[in-house]
Length: 322
Image (cartoon, rainbow, N blue to C red; front, side, top):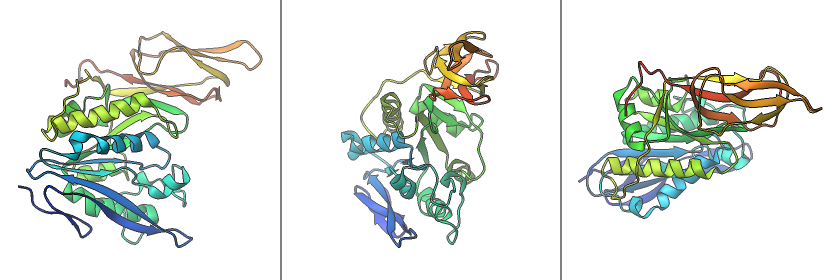
């Protein structure tokens, strides 16, 4: 049997499901906002898994993924272990529908945080102090930025076997070798030996049902892989991406795509074109290398130098097998 779990002084016993509050934060209007954390616990011991979303307030796909997982019948009656779920981490930015906090900070650059710092630093501190100690690993759900549509993908560090093991069970269509960035939840969690993988899918402020369904199915595969639920989802055969490059616009104009997101492309393939608003084609966009489309700029009007197409590359000699 599992022992009691405590988050900021709030106990959740084995076999209990409860919503606890990570902490409350005060806005300049003296309005207090709370971050709810849903905890589902089985009687039997097992892994403690974190699913979290809404690190950026406009990334709605991840919020819907975690919501749907929490509503799943099998998840509500875990066979073993613990599920810690935070559908909206950044409740403040979610309220305003913005990426950044009111002071302009990106919450995912505020880690490990400080108890007496900015709002972002305080939220980061509370996640590291109260959530990371009670989990074994987790998945943090994100989307592409404004007008950037990311094909469903899981980002981890291939050189760490525990990352690859989690990715194998999640089984997203694309798995990308992604190094740690300073100030992020993922990097600071890794320092505590608590691997956090990042799922990216769709674009901000727009539901992408393929990305949502892949995210939900990945979570169910992950929980089934650790024998936490009795519900099996057929796996994908993930494409392992070891590097990437952005194709940028050499001309300004109207951007038209010729290939679908997630498509496999060959070097020299026509990917799209940029046309002048006054008629003629200004530039043909071709693939600089073999690879997969992992992200697209959906903005129809582009300027010289804009990032248009994100291509994931495979290093056949050093690829990781799942």
